[in-house]
Image 1 (cartoon, rainbow over the protein chains, first blue to last red):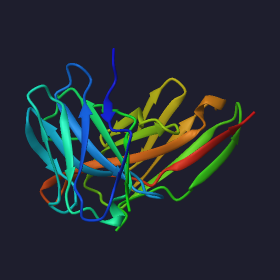
Image 2: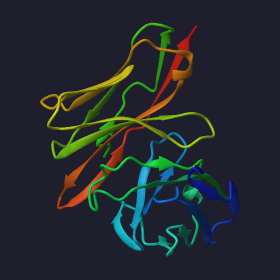
Image 3: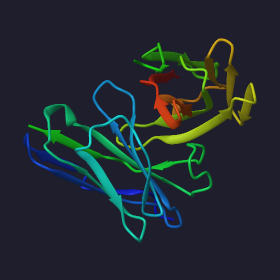
Length: 117
Length: 114
């Protein structure tokens, strides 16, 4: 069974540009989560999508947005890139048993390394 | 405001001995706790979780202990194996100010020495 896949593996952008990161969940999973791991920091929760809807959002500015498609894949968009957006962006997926709580086991992809110059 | 803290950035343990990774949290509203393991160039892998209604959960070589009064949880790995060398993240979730939150610690790098 294929795991969570993310593309691209690496992405280099300049300040002010927009970045689009993609995630395909494990087959059968309806929830997709996005995380940011900046250098030296732990994972920070960004967004949670389930059945095409945004379920929860972390403490990030509105220029971080995303969406989930009918096939449950997801995009993370980061607008007006800043240098501090350079980080590893991780996507995870899960079955949706708890619709509001973070108690479902999440399976992570390998991440997209975003570098903002 | 670091609500979940892993105060040891790194830990080195002899193979076969017990590894104890610690995690402290500040908000008593957290009621579900998780541990993840991360190898380089891979995404985190779920290890074990515990609800606040329990004080211990065991899965094979991994045991998580929760001390609610101290707002402290620990992960015990017995016996430690070389393949356990990785970065370990604890995470806490719960309803904070009317919304479900999930907060990770900064991670502890565990090295198992042969």
